[in-house]
Image (tube, rainbow, N blue to C red; front, side, top):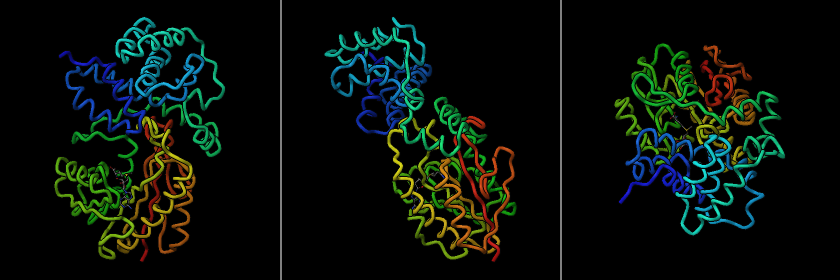
Length: 375
Ligand SMILES: C[S@@+](CC[C@H](N)C(=O)[O-])C[C@H]1O[C@@H](n2cnc3c(N)ncnc32)[C@H](O)[C@@H]1O
């Protein structure tokens, strides 16, 4: 049996994503399994086709709309989207984009895919809105522009060409903004001691802790993610102790830790580049629900923190609600805390904390706040 071509693998992956599976998980499964027969270059091409087509779905659908008159099956829809993405974003020569996509398309729809792609190849796109052109839901586009003005626009555009995270010296692949959070945690507690990471999976930040920490607890609510966390810890920091519990209600003793990190579940609106399908799943309502969890995690973190210990709150999002609003309300409730000034010139001052917008350094958008407990 012949191995599948890159486009066949990409098309199968896109069809699964179309029916609701998460892009990063599907890609990992395909490239670790069916993708095994592919060269390194082909795997990179599959990744580009899948992530790019998923990310640019709204823009691509706008290009296709005039030529599609009925609802298409997921595999056929995925084929025309993938073809249009190659034509308009990868600038693949029309004959290659069309012929090779038709070759990968389901047999019953080859004629339709061929006809649609030949027409799409010839159009000069006219965009009804920038949200369509840059392929974001209107609410995300509007939220960024209302919150950040032209910088919000620049952030969104930069998340369409995301950072390729590189390996740390120990080999773990991690984005730069996440490394800056770990650096901030280390810098604020030069004497180390015991640290609790309340929301730790998959373990990027816990394993990046500096050498001064004598005890590292990594807590995670989701058992499957905790298993992945244990594997990462075994590979990069075997002394880490993994705990599975709700970080808003843990069994850690009062005043156990010299430092607590709350790298909280969030809307992820600063990490839309890294998660190509996330923009199509997140809802505005979810943000309000998440702030409830973020508040509760901070309260639990404070219970665990020793006097003079440092609490770090970080989120890979740039919404006002999940950054300043959560941080300010928490600080107002707890006058025993004083803000710690962040080191590192990459952080913009953001309320009492720091922020990087995605276009600042071509990283994830990230916000971080730190407080020291005075008593
Ligand atoms: C932003 S991710 C953490 C990333 C991690 N710190 C790293 O650097 O690799 C947030 C994590 O919090 C977990 N989580 C969500 N709600 C939680 C809760 N109530 N208690 C503990 N963990 C929670 C999620 O399952 C997810 O793994």
